[in-house]
Length: 63
Image 1: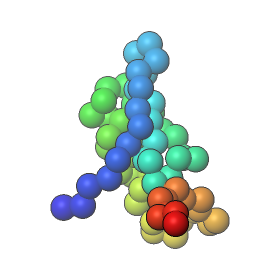
Image 2: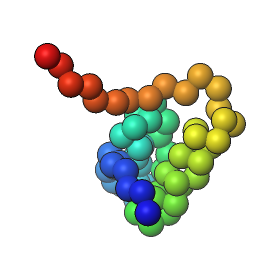
Image 3: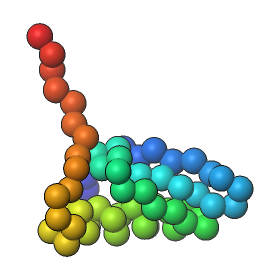
């Protein structure tokens, strides 16, 4: 199983977050579990070609 990092927070009763690899694509859920499921759905759409011109985040080594 592959893992990835997410950034998330709770605003009132709503959980919000994004995949760190794709910081431009937010989603939400009424529970933390629902947020995680929605993040997996977003990843499928982003990596499956359903969304054009996807912007990504990555790290590089600087000399």
